[in-house]
Image 1 (tube, rainbow, N blue to C red):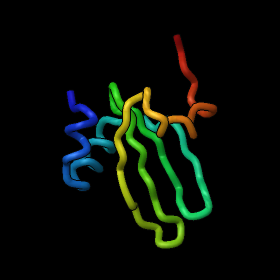
Image 2: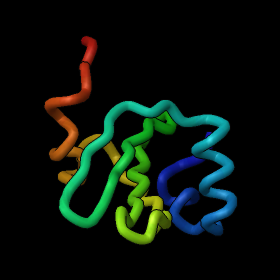
Image 3: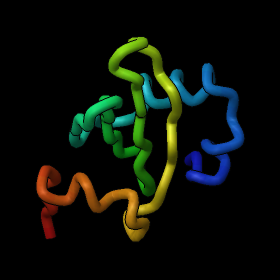
Image 4: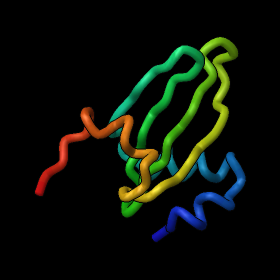
Amino acid sequence: MITSALFKVLHEHEQFKLVWQHAALVAERIDQKHFYRLYQMGSFYVEEQWHKKFKRRIAFTPFNCSDEALDPYLEQIEIML
C-alpha cells in the first residue's frame, strides 16, 4: 500500500494515475481562484488543486487525517464510527 510520503515524491503523472485508479472522491470546495477536490487514498487524503481561470491542475497535496489541511472539508465529510 502506498503512503503519503511515497505519494509526495512521485511524478505528477504517477500521482494522477494512482488517484484515478485507487482514490475515492469525498469532498469538493471552491475559493476565489481555485477549485479543490479531496480524495481518500486508503490511510491518507490527497487534495487536488485547480486554477479556475487557467483550468489547470496546480498540485496534488497528500496529508494525513490529523493534518489541519483537512479542516476546510470537515463539514462535508460523513464520518462513520
